[in-house]
Image (cartoon, rainbow, N blue to C red; front, top):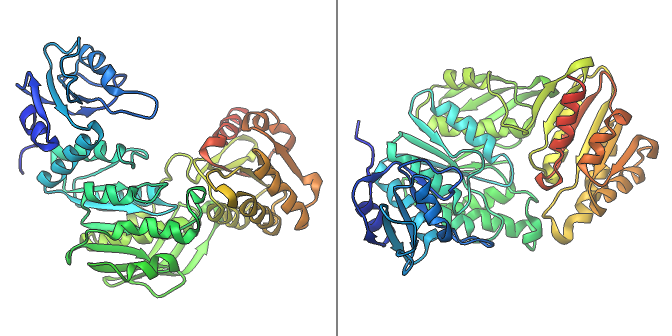
Length: 467
């Protein structure tokens, strides 16, 4: 096994196209951009944000134990940097990205990069779980998936793991392109295209074009794992410069599930067919969206020669990522489907399908928070969600947010849901305070909304009250 990559000041400066202006001895134990969490011996990179200049905190980083700092050219002589290695660069963000890219190249690690409008994190976690049966695997923590988070995640490749599984996020055109250049993935996974971040784009087609940047820079040995059920993905995947492997449920695919049984909160089962054979899948992860995520991960696992039986066994004991479809069983037979991490119209409809398919002792209650970043499409898309709620047969609706949340209420009533079964709150805190008015023993409660609406507050209150 090759030794770890040594982050010496000289090596880092060359990677960043920077200059060592002070110190330069020894090596760094890691990289950080936050003086609040930096550890002794790490290299501090003074990133400039919209509202702050990280270089101004370089002295604080040294005081906290940083062994070196990266600052813009001409600022290496600031007070408080004595005793530390100081590297000057043209642009600290670009320097961090360049360092991550060189680390990625030097590591010899295979990189799997995942993008899509929904399911990125779950697909990342499942893929890492499957590959972990055979390889040393790292994954980016949480949602560190942007132009700063991804480079920080790739710095873990100094330990030369066998495989890195990372997700690539975006809300503007050009962002995935930047991340692909940094990560140079061997395997790319495209889960789907949806309305998430539609407020930043002219159409869903424009979102698909931005996501299609995942295809860039591919060579003949590159692999794309693509969703055959999503026409926007499929039409663009045909232009990929490497090998395409598809997954799906409703259409022909290399990795395909049939005989699907959606048991609601009890999980999902299916018969999965692959080029390496077939197997029966049972997983506690809920809904067809998660089944698709598992199929994508299975396709990656097959590429890395992970046995089907091993992936089936690991799928049987998967647990959801925090606030992403977590089934929480509380006192007095109250069950909460905690899907409060984020939301978009497609994801809400999938969650309503789970709610409808689940056995319940009391009522089915849908707590729907406003979906953000939908721009001028917001009202119409919230109306569609309101119609979906009414048609899903839920017993109670709780809508949370501003005018778009009211659009959910109006559309639900128009579609036939009795007004006295609906409650509306302007904030999640207000909804949490009134939980006793809409949750009773035996109820099954779906909680879903965009992060900015903080529907997780409702989940926390329900956990406290029905413990």
